[in-house]
Image 1 (tube, rainbow, N blue to C red):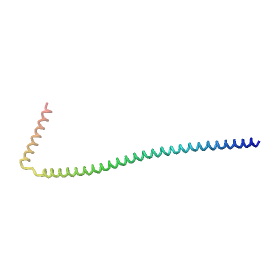
Image 2: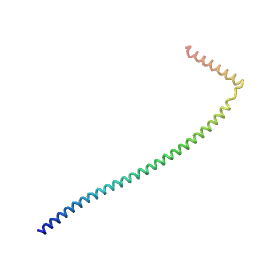
Image 3: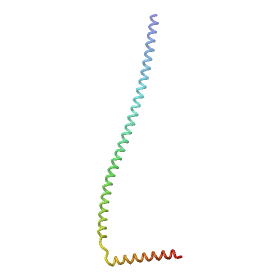
Image 4: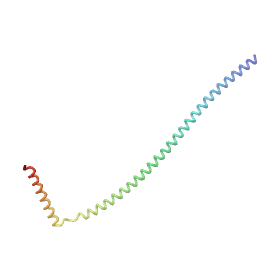
Length: 124
């Protein structure tokens, strides 16, 4: 009986060890899944970091370009204002007597032609 009780005890120890081994294998598999998830999250974070850096570089380039464009627009506007000032200074001269006489005669001719056109249009 001692052999049989020793065998039974050994059997129970083996069954217990098998259960422990099975549980350990389950824990190992669970840890592998966790490590895989952590690895995939790490890769995803690296991709997001690279994308964020690329977008930040693009934004920086756009801001720099915008500043350069604003400076260029201001320079162009200053040149145009200066050119307009030159043109205005040329136009501020007074009309001579013959220029005024010519403008008055032209306006009179325009009004007379307009009146004749209305008369002809509505007299029929």
